Amino acid sequence: MAVVEDDDRLRASFITRLERAQGVRCVAAFANAEQALAQMPESAPAVVLMDINLPGKSGIDCVRELKGRLPATQFLMLTVYEDVDLIFRSLQAGATGYLLKRSVPEDLLNAIRDLHAGGAPMTSLIARKVVESFSQPAKPRTDEAASLSPREREIVEALAEGSQYKEIADRLGIGISTVRTHLQRIYEKLRVNNRTEAVVKYLGRG
Image (cartoon, rainbow, N blue to C red):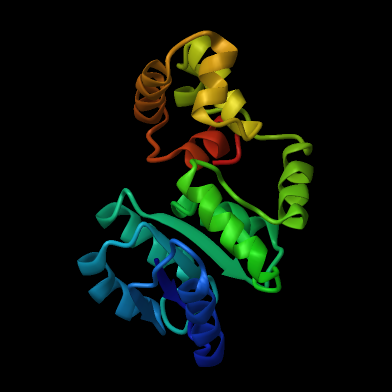
């Protein structure tokens, strides 16, 4: 785990919560994006708690740059903002989850565990805003999205519903390895790097 948060007291609070949790270890903490970009690749944490409103370079820009260097790392945005545009910009940059800072400690730890299980955690309020946004008229799907096969579209739509790989495999009667193979082809066709970006682009929000 790593934390990127400019508020000293809040950063210390996050570190304390993580260190007290079973099976979680905080390997690094940074006060700004510039520090994170310079030092985080050395520790290569599995999960990063990232503040959006950082001094200097924003948390969204920081995620975008780090994701290219740490493709296996999962980024969980922590913010006071409920703005839909910020949510989508974060997801498009490579974040996998989005929580409000006022979330209770247990929700934060559950979100971290959810990330490890392949989920994309969001608070119920944020998830509702995303759903409401999708209910609005969407832009026409991109040529890349139109190139997906019927089976690939089934898989992306299942991801949009929040299904895990095993659930998708069971639903479609295929193996998990086959799901992963389809996902790689989906990522290539949509020109994205992860499941969240794939869903956003497929639904016409990219």
